[in-house]
Image 1 (cartoon, rainbow, N blue to C red):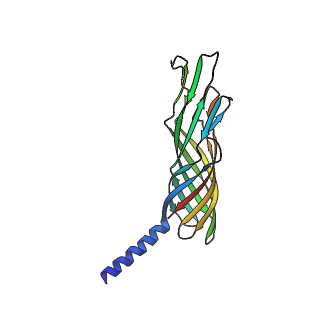
Image 2: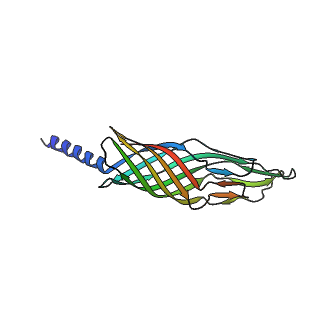
Image 3: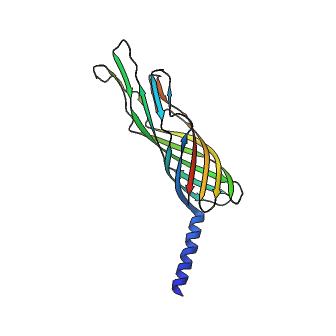
Length: 200
């Protein structure tokens, strides 16, 4: 009898915990390039994936608080030749984005539309930018800001079967650029993404 009572208590506790807290993964595609290229000699590629863990605390009245850790990777390269003496080159980097959002789900059973809004912090890792001459002597680095902050808004659907599947469109406006190099290559302050979250 004690064993059955303990098992029942654990099942009820697990059910209550699942109603208050969920965790899973988000993956998606960037809808905008991470970098703006001004010069025709500039080349940038935003790798077409975003991925990272997500957690959410469920509150009454359809509200929730979501925190994500989203990773993306991009390549960037720029070459400027001035009188055959200058070489400007950029390489690879990645970025971790940490959004903290308040979410509201509209009433529904299997499908619940939702909107969310909040703030995000973005941190560049492995950023390398140099300007050097053909002799290999470094000239000057570009203006860099490894961490920036932005405002986030989004909208999506919560499809609840056994798990939650949540496709979403999200827009972020960063307050400052990560870098702006000689007005030739600069990070984009407007960011749009399509993501799908899967939580349990």
